[in-house]
Length: 96
Image 1: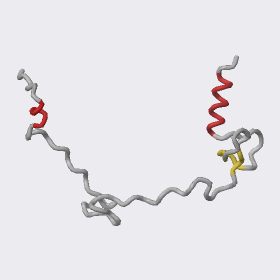
Image 2: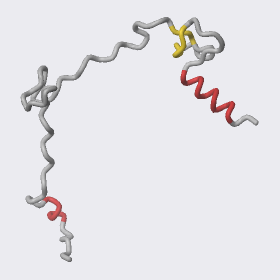
Image 3: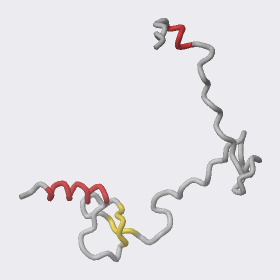
Image 4: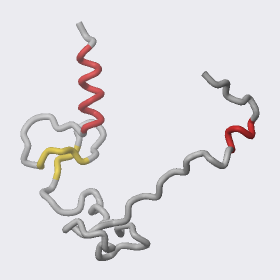
């Protein structure tokens, strides 16, 4: 078993392996040509997500914080947003 050198220069040895370059973008067919819209071999970013509250049915407000919930306005009963629903579950879980 060979001893490893203790000098800091040993870490910067020229024979250390380099990280491989990332694979270029490909067509859906798998050909190595650049994909349409690719920039320097990388795919262009896709369309951004629509802003929250854009489209879809009107959502009911949370009865505690008045933020939109996951439920439609036609939902019967108490409507809570995900944060308030989680906090309510924590409060009721430990009550005896």
